[in-house]
Amino acid sequence: MPAKRPLSESLLSKITLSRFLELSGKTFLQQVVALEESEDFQALRPYLTISALPDSEWSESDTPVRASCQLQWRPETEQPRLQYQSRYFTRQYGLLAETGLDELPAAHWPAPQRKLWQQLRLVNTRNLLTHALIRVVVRAQRDYLRSGDMADLVQYTQQSAADDMAQLPDTQGIVCEASRISRLAGHLCLLTGEGRPLALSRLFVNSRQRSQYLLDSLIKAEALSLFQGYRGRLLTDDDLAVILNNVHQLGISRRSITHARHSLAIPDHRERHKHMPYVAATSGFSRLRPLRLELLDHAIPARAGVYEIRLRDTEPGENTLSVLPSHNRILYIGSSTNLKKRLREHLTGNSNNNELHAQLVLGNAEVRYKLYETPRWIERKLYQTFVQTFGASPCCNRISP
Image 1 (cartoon, one colour):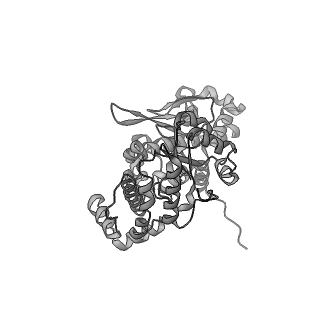
Image 2 (cartoon, helix red, strand yellow):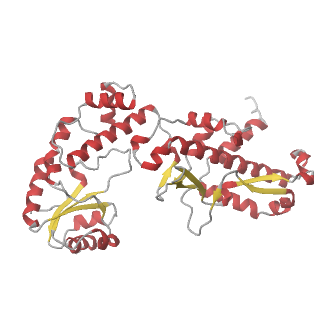
Image 3 (tube, one colour):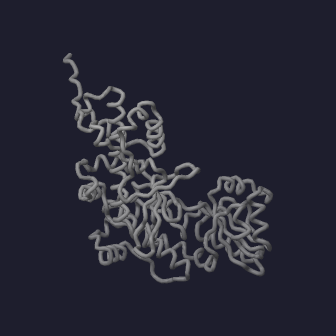
């Protein structure tokens, strides 16, 4: 059996960098802190310069780091300000010229300092690539980051990001390739202006994904129009293809629309039309509100009315419709002369409905309501309409009202 050839130094460096780029933000921070607290770092410190990335800002907090970077919008320029959640995400290490150490080949350094310097250079490279990657992706998806509307996502791949990064002046001399971006982006997370965590990888969109996002957006807009009282013709696959091709210039066929609709679990226009009776019956209901004890006092009035409790929709882009849910997402239809008191009883388990309470304690339910002077009769009518529309009662309504 032939002997294995040792890896070349160049290949070994590439493998080491690839693994370093795959570190989570938390692990990366721990490693940088450990490096700076090591005895070898203290011995090398007189020869080092420590600076921050150009045009970078950071803030320290006692709370755990939830993301690498937070976006803060500047209204006067409509450009986001990038603020890193730790100074270690902006670290750049160098060698003082007057020490002469920068002219000495690293191979001649003592082994501990040579190894430490290699690790510090990895930190430099990762932080440079991270800063460049976040900037080009945020610039490309700026409209979506401002609006939160999936329809505003543009087609932007990892190769597109690599090409844009290669044009930046501070990445010259660093290989910007899609494979490195893939390893890095998988562990990066942004905080939006509202403080919502957003995985950077979700901002990479290929043509197929963009088609699905736009299709999902159109169907949700249609559902909203139904909710607001529209009773006209619903969008067929031919209609959807015309809109996507004429408005968004996708060049997509009707057959591709059908496949995309199936992959998103969106029913065709005939099935969607069957939901119209229940949508009409709930016209005028409040917007959906998280059903949690601490929010009841501010979100729910202590007045008579009818309410609907449902499971919260998943993240945008997943297979749900917020206005036309499948019947198994709606948990309960009820009424009360005091909505706030009744919902508090549901949340605390004092409503004699164990099935509903078991769902509510998971913390992923929402409620919407409408005020009525005589809610009991309206509840009965709404319940009957639900059964006629979906062919079954809400899963936590044990008996007909």
